[in-house]
Amino acid sequence: MRHQLSFFTALLLVGCAVQSQPQGGPRDENPPTIVAQSPAMGTLNWSGNTAEVSFDEYIQAKNLRTAITTTPALEGIEAKIKGKSLSIEWDTQELLPNTTYRIALGDAVGDLNENNLYQNLELVWSTGSYIDSLSLHGSTIPEKKAPFDKLKIWLVPSGVDTVTTAIFSTVPGKSGEFKFSYLPHGTFDVLVFEDLNFNNRWEPESEPFGISKNHNTELDSLPVNVPFYNGFFELPEDPSTSLMDSIAVILDTAKAENTGHLTLLIPPVDQTTFGWLIHESGFQKKFIFTTYRQNDTSYLDLGNQLPGNYVFRGFIDSNSDSTWTPASWYEGRESEFILTDQNFELKANWDLEQTLILK
Image (cartoon, rainbow, N blue to C red; front, side, top):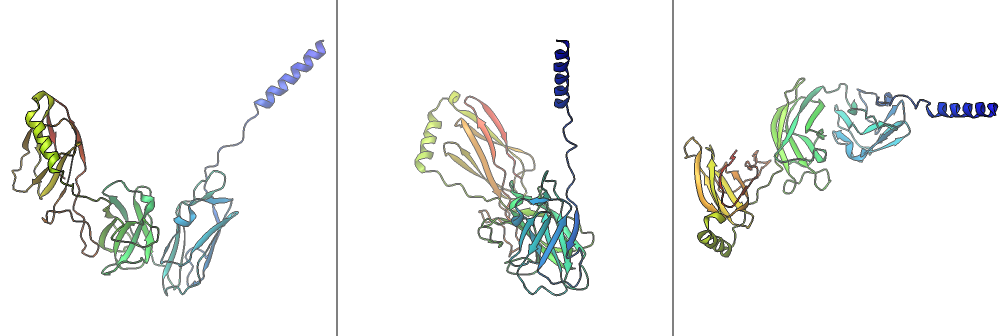
């Protein structure tokens, strides 16, 4: 009996030892390392149509097709992954002479197990005897929240009248930042746009964009801030006469405790500004704030108004044509500034002083 007890005790101890066995090593946090690349980085006098990058471990890539950008453009470019290698091929074509080419894949490639990303993967070669070394970098600043991963940024030689394609193209990072490297000496205009139909072309009539013109490439260039005019202002439609008459009757006959008293605090403006105060019912008032007003904040007493939710929206009429004017690449014109929508609630039997933001 004693021997049986010792036997079962031994089994129990062995079982416990197995269960407490350590689990694996530390998590791999290192990206794959390049062990071979063709053409080699900085190759001169090269005009082939295939490239390959080999890594020290198996790799994967997400959205590889959309991640690739080439400057200048390479027609029919395709990329695929097999094991530890990334191969890239493009149509046989006559490359530009004495030109530095760059294929950029951003952070698309990572190792197979943990997807640790290789940062800023690129291939650079020249069809001539030197590599261009100038650069231009900056950020795009949207009027409204923008899907940076769906934007394209082009460099266009300054002075062109028609923008159909770009010699140099890239995509912004997660915060809107961008950088062009290996550029020749020159002066360029920067175009940022959202390629809504994914055709690698800019459609100025339908795709939001931003512009910043006349920037020189330099060894240590200053950052360029490119506004992105992705806002659009549609003039509010005039409400029906019957609605306006009905609201007027309600305000005339309602008891004071069933309405709210509204006063707008108007800051000074240095340009004519149009605004609309719109009630959830559709009732609205239009305002024009001019530069002839005094420098101090003024009070606009609107008296008793309908309780409920209001929104104030408008734009700065920079060219004084009484309508909102969009941006124009060809005229080098920014879009007129759109005020951020301002929402507030007016409660019955309340006095509300609402400050408007007009810049």
